[in-house]
Length: 157
Image (cartoon, rainbow, N blue to C red):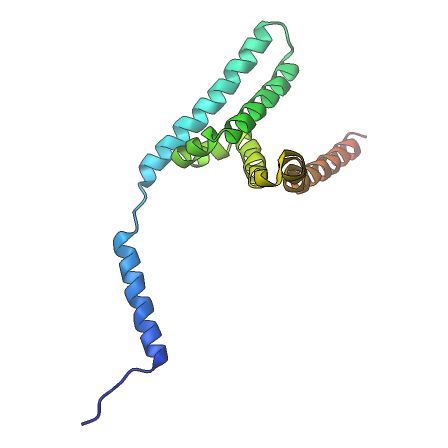
């Protein structure tokens, strides 16, 4: 009577299958509906706060264009500040895309990646790295703006 002993590859396959089945039993299932509701609420609150700032600035005499610009600066600054003290990351865990989609998500992405280099110092760590992270995004934005501006100039002339 011959004993069938599995070779090394068969042991690896069995081990992987057992591991996958174990992972499936302990892996949490996300509540998609609840996550969508939280994203909608938080994203809406961020946008509503921005609209409140715009309305306040317009009521105090600024033009609509100036109020929009000031509001963008205020929201980006607040998001960068809240990222620096760790609040925005907690909000992102709860709200998901609701905190990422508005303009504040861009500020969070830049500051959070720069904060990883805090241990290297604020000047050569955070200060230097924030531009390496934001650089490609800014270059793309400038290039796109120039391209769109050229299209507009040629279309109107």
